[in-house]
Image 1 (cartoon, helix red, strand yellow):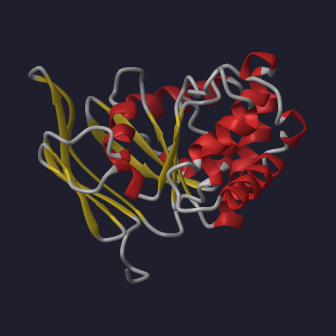
Image 2 (cartoon, rainbow, N blue to C red):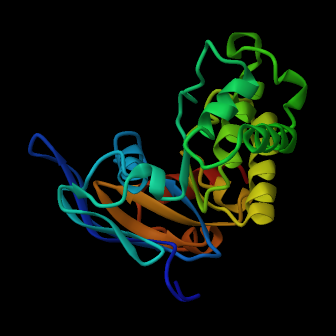
Length: 250
C-alpha cells in the first residue's frame, strides 16, 4: 500500500433489496489520513453502506477496496469481516447483557492471535482510554447510557482497527455527553492512527472529529467536502435545510 492508495474506496457500488434500489452507483474514497461523516435523511441507506464496508453484506453491483485490496464485489464478499481491520459500533451498541464491561471488551478480542494475558492487558487499556475502567466489573444493565457507549467504543478500539465505523451510536445522549465522546473519538483516532467513518444526522459532527462531510440522499452521494464550504452553496436537501436552520438562529 502506497501513501496515495485510499484506505477505503467504493467504485460504482449499488445495493438492491427485493428490486428496491437503496444505493445507486456510489463512488467514495477515504484516504489514510481522513475521517468522514456521512449524513442524510432516515432511510437514505447510510446503515446499509456501513454494512457493505464492514463485509456484513455484499453489494449488488460494484467493488469495495480496502488499502488497495479487493474486499467485496458484485454479490461476493472476498475479504471476511474479521480480516478487514474494521471495527463497528452499532446504534443499539450490541453489548452482551450476560458479560461485564471487561468481558464485552475481551469478547471483541477473542478473534485475535493474542495470549489471554495480552487480551486482558489490551482490554483494560481500552477501558481506561475510554474512561470506564472503574466499571469494568459491572454488567451493562447497571451502567448509564453514557457508560454503555464508552464500553462499546472501548470494545471497538481495543482491536486497534484501521477503520472505525460508527452507526449513529450517540442518539440517546444529551448534547454535552455526546460532544465529550466525539472529542474522545477524535483524540483516540489520532493516537491510534484509526480512521473514523461516522454516520450522523447532525452535520456539525464532521468538525468535531476533523472529518470531511458527505451527504447521502436518494441512494446517491449528493455532495462531499468541508461543511463550511458546502453550506455556501448547498445542493442537497439536507444541507439546504441546515443552512436555513442556521440562518434562523441569527
